Image: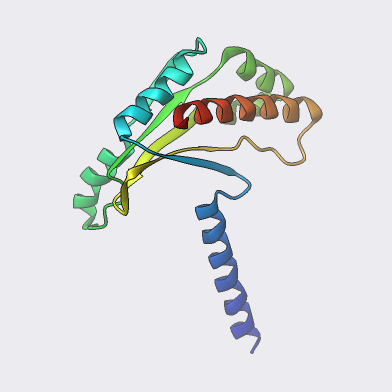
Length: 159
């Protein structure tokens, strides 16, 4: 009986976790817009570069999954298009790392832009919230400032 109860609780936790991922949860911000993927991606790039921030790298996630899926025998198409844009803002990155050198893990910032096979006309723009529960005040302030920047960039891309 105890094993059955434990299994049921694990299943409930998994369902709850999946629902929070789809809804965004406390650690993820997801916004969407009815538009062409290329237009929203370009708006995202412009929102970043318009703030004087240099993009470090773009990751072509949809292409990577398509390419490697064949080798793995995977047939499910996760994205129609999907990219990640990596960047840092020097003053915010410095503040977070001066607060605690281990905060390097929060840099670079990554914003994802993607479409899914279920709805090719909806473009999603998302980022992982920089969170450090229990961290000191300086880290909390630095991460809050980064979150504010990321949200502003995402909102500009989907407006």
